[in-house]
Image (cartoon, rainbow, N blue to C red; front, side, top):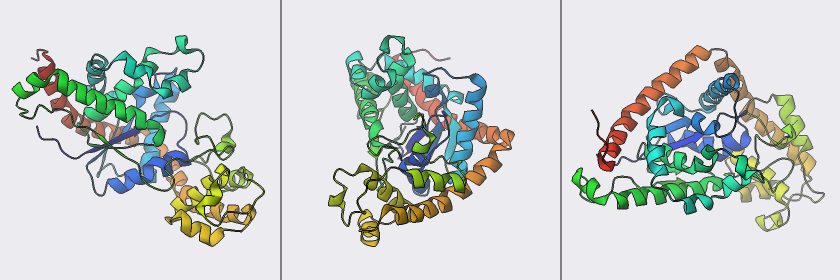
Length: 345
């Protein structure tokens, strides 16, 4: 079973996708599907690590799928599916629960942030979330994972789990025909672009997030032109003119964020944008930024609306993608069972 270069990534179906999801991840996903074998997932198993309304969850899964497609993911080029339709994710996650060590999970900073002070009331699923993320990736023996900076720690854990599985079952892996004793690859992070971490429009020190209580903090992929213009106009800035070089970003996170967003939208280096707008006031730049955002987001928002009007077609796409995902994951999971020592009929 040869290791094939393969990309895997996914997003949770919780709330509307926003500009941070799009520029920080999806732009690169779209590019990679032209050069790689890509598997993109709506990670609904991860979504239920916190309480969800079942009806709202189904709607959110379809909405995120519509956003994927509207943004440019082609379900004929990439495999596009929702996680819960492929049982290998949950099966491999249990195996990894038995491979990973408690000490590893105790070091995961995202659990501490999400669970907050009431950690004793958090679900076991939220705590073991990184093991499921490792299973998501390694169920396909994926070699590359586009991730944001905040997910790098989880990917490093996936690499540790892969290595420990290979070490723990080395003799069994060799007996199953893998002469080098390596079954799972070490997945590599793919972090590219000038705006891989898009920050809040209200606080340039915090990541743009769908969980932020203020809708003014983010540009949603479903926002119309007037809403986008209003949010950009109200975006937090400082009284100084735009800097002329990147050294001028020191102590000015909001300026760095807005410039980074624009640079990514127009596909120019930050330095080139600063050469063009350095020394100008934010009021003039914000109008240019709003126009660029509307030009990019409005067609996507319209397509999301059109696709969402036909949930049966979205379900068909997810069903087709899930079948294709199972074709890859099922043989890998069967081999895992053989390596671990399970009996298969």
